[in-house]
Length: 52
View 1 (cartoon, rainbow, N blue to C red):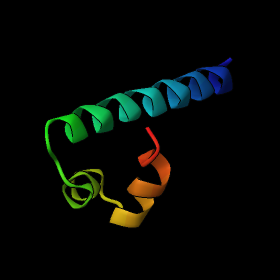
View 2 (cartoon, helix red, strand yellow; view 1 turned 60 degrees about the vertical axis):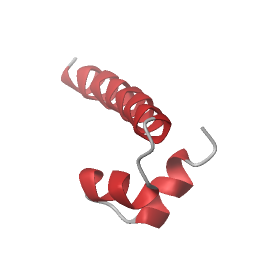
View 3 (spheres, rainbow, N blue to C red; view 1 turned 90 degrees about the horizontal axis):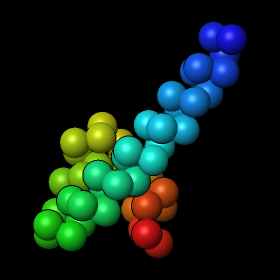
């Protein structure tokens, strides 16, 4: 019950993050700017979303 909801929310959050990163890149944001907003390293965000 609750664990399924957590899993569903996690999947939704991953999808939302991907959409927002693509949007930020389309708007000219650097990987460094995106990383700072997400609280991760530039390398981490580029590795996760760089091919999108």
